[in-house]
Length: 343
Ligand code: HEC
Ligand code: HEC
Ligand code: HEC
Ligand code: HEC
Ligand code: HEC
Ligand code: HEC
Ligand code: HEC
Ligand code: HEC
Ligand code: HEC
Ligand code: HEC
Image (tube, rainbow, N blue to C red):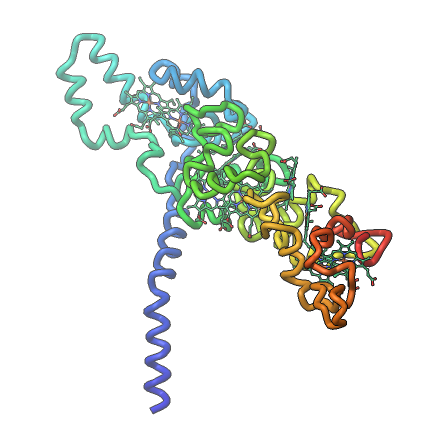
């Protein structure tokens, strides 16, 4: 009885895993298929392109990619052909067709265009005809690990973006970016809002980081290219590090640490994007926030077990409005070097 059961369980698990394994195999296969010819003989350089592709060529000279158009780069990684592949047959094909037309040999030109095999061989790589994974893999040929600012070092393969089929080209455009710098399709945060509508709503709340106003960017806290932390945050898992980059006074170490700041991170008490509550707290008032964890601290909620109406610790009689604003007395709520109860 036991063995058939075991077999059934294994079979069930294996069946359930098929879609996951299949997509991984497909993704890997896609990445490994060489899209571009590796034969240097197919590469003719970018000089001729201008004649027929004036727009792309003019714009290209203004972008950072024009740095690859020289003999410091291998012929297969130089200029236009680095992304579109060897152009030998492409140039020959269209040059001869143009020549025929100029000479008035329209029928011959048409015959050339109709020659399926030649037309196919003349085809350059077009990004509209490849998958998101293939496009990203092509860019990563140069941009993985080493290229770019050191702290950016691409971890694109482990990013939520890559895993959900977002490609480099959803954010960058080689030839018609809105901003030439970083070849961005749009500036932050608008570009991010296109897919993250709910974040637009959180940043519209009354107390928020000045992202919509342009005071800071999504990418100050997140690495849009992916990294090791959850939620694509820059650095630490708890989300502390992106915060401390700017709020250095909260970093400590303090003689008297407030445990949750270190243990759970800023998010124990603050929402990172925006909130309807002042200071972006997770609760409508300071008091409610504190009591969420301190309702069991002896004496703090001010329960009256003395029968005097003052509570067992008069300073914490919450019935009295004066004592409701906890941070009026516990001023150094993020940690103190003076007093164990952060006063
Ligand atoms: C003599 C003219 C001519 C030259 C030179 C030329 N192209 Fe083209 N190219 C064309 C034409 C015409 C098309 C449009 C094909 C279509 O729309 O079907 C084209 C299309 C393309 C495409 C889109 C994919 C395709 O093949 O349809 C890319 C990419 C491209 N060219 C890149 C280049 C690059 C890079 C160079 C320089 C190495 C270059 N071209 C040189 C005429 C030329
Ligand atoms: C960094 C990679 C890269 C380089 C270098 C590059 N391109 Fe492109 N090219 C692209 C991408 C990506 C697209 C798709 C449109 C976009 O993102 O702007 C494209 C689109 C095109 C198209 C439109 C055809 C189509 O597929 O729809 C032409 C033509 C073209 N490129 C020509 C050139 C020429 C000429 C050069 C050199 C001056 C060049 N490209 C250099 C990446 C590149
Ligand atoms: C042949 C190698 C190569 C390929 C392929 C390549 N790049 Fe680049 N890229 C570079 C180099 C080199 C730079 C310039 C780096 C620098 O300024 O130090 C650059 C710069 C950039 C920049 C920064 C631009 C700036 O203003 O600083 C972006 C964005 C970029 N590439 C995106 C892409 C995308 C998207 C693709 C795929 C369509 C791609 N690259 C393919 C080599 C490459
Ligand atoms: C979700 C949007 C998004 C995706 C996807 C994305 N990028 Fe970027 N990238 C950006 C933004 C935004 C910046 C500018 C950051 C800044 O302003 O500091 C940038 C900057 C860059 C830069 C220049 C700065 C640097 O780090 O050196 C390069 C190079 C680059 N991206 C390449 C790529 C490549 C290659 C891919 C795909 C593997 C890719 N990006 C995918 C949004 C994106
Ligand atoms: C001040 C730093 C900061 C800024 C600026 C910021 N984020 Fe976040 N974001 C965070 C933190 C921290 C989390 C993790 C929240 C959690 O785990 O509870 C997060 C979570 C997210 C998530 C995951 C979903 C969620 O709400 O938990 C998305 C998506 C996101 N941010 C997108 C954006 C976009 C888009 C922008 C710009 C419009 C942006 N963020 C700006 C710090 C920031
Ligand atoms: C083309 C659509 C698209 C664009 C543009 C885009 N994202 Fe995303 N982003 C996604 C998708 C899809 C996911 C994965 C699903 C999810 O978590 O929403 C994701 C995930 C994320 C996450 C991780 C959320 C988590 O739960 O782990 C963060 C953070 C994030 N994006 C930030 C940004 C930032 C910052 C920008 C702008 C620079 C941006 N995104 C632009 C589509 C996009
Ligand atoms: C790029 C710098 C930067 C980063 C990173 C950053 N902040 Fe801020 N933060 C600011 C600035 C500037 C202000 C004050 C101006 C304003 O209202 O936006 C502020 C204000 C605040 C406020 C007070 C808001 C108020 O209503 O007075 C809180 C709370 C806060 N940040 C928490 C965080 C947390 C939590 C993180 C990490 C998730 C974080 N910050 C990351 C720059 C930053
Ligand atoms: C135990 C809860 C708690 C934690 C955890 C916490 N804060 Fe706060 N924070 C508060 C409270 C409460 C206030 C409001 C103080 C007031 O109104 O007097 C505040 C106010 C702030 C302010 C605005 C006023 C000021 O002092 O500058 C900033 C900025 C801030 N916190 C950043 C952070 C950062 C960054 C972290 C993570 C390192 C963090 N907080 C962790 C409770 C917390
Ligand atoms: C996320 C839970 C959490 C929140 C919210 C929180 N605290 Fe704490 N607090 C703790 C923990 C845990 C300790 C350490 C308790 C211990 O050592 O016995 C602590 C310690 C303290 C201490 C020192 C206690 C002692 O024994 O010396 C004071 C004072 C304090 N908190 C005040 C506050 C105030 C005021 C607020 C609201 C602004 C607040 N706390 C919000 C978890 C929290
Ligand atoms: C009028 C000033 C004042 C206000 C307002 C106040 N506290 Fe206190 N709190 C104190 C003093 C003084 C102590 C130290 C008492 C002691 O050492 O016996 C203390 C001690 C504490 C302790 C440490 C208890 C312990 O056992 O050591 C906690 C936790 C605490 N308060 C939380 C709160 C919370 C939560 C609020 C808001 C509901 C609050 N306090 C409001 C003055 C105040």
